[in-house]
Image (cartoon, rainbow, N blue to C red; front, side, top):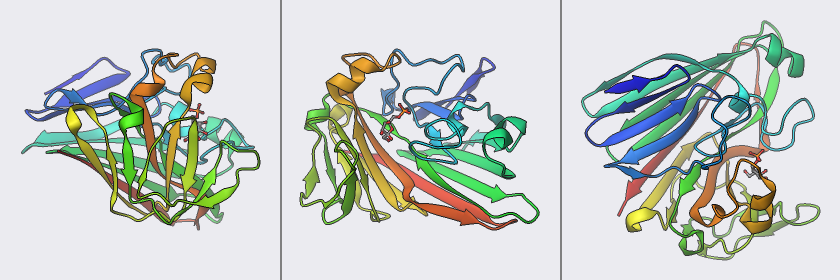
Length: 279
Ligand code: TA6
């Protein structure tokens, strides 16, 4: 089954449902048996006027502050093209594309082609981003993030395992000092904004989803895991985020934030994450 209203579309089968906005190719909902896994703010702008607050915004060609353009780059604020997909044998697939254009080249003088494929099968959601340098002779480099927002009953009950021993940059502190994580299970009980570097490609688990569920995060070609919750004060400063929403969300974001990805002309990069919900 699918339904579309031009700027967003839903695809569903007997197990799951996904909703994607062409604005930013933002997946705003992933439901399993009717249970929502993804957080999207009730105040999110869905009219294309700004990046959607929630879902899985695509941070490209930059993660974080970007001297050439908006924070987190232009991809999450661009209109992507729906390329196609399928919905059979219990597997929902959809693809979207974004190519360099006059707008992007005003900020970043690089020729690129992004093809983003989303696949929902059983309790798993697979996100794959292919970035090709379509230039003739120019290398470019970029940082990238699948900026995943997850819906939880109470962020203070969430635990993230698999990060122990990793170096992290703490963006909540002046000068973004680095430290080493010493906890088996990371909890979020205050404003948190950390880039865990060289995180394992599998074994990171977020517990505390609705219904007592947990989420296994598997990744490839993405070195880092970002953990973010704005907490009360910062939430109050965001017009597209409800003042009382911060306890109901947590961002766990596979990224290449601490190091750049360089592509020669004609080269391609593929970043993949697989999210699996389990009891
Ligand atoms: O991923 C965490 C982060 O980089 C935070 O520093 C915070 O800025 C968050 O992204 C949201 O950024 P945004 O530009 O969407 O408000």
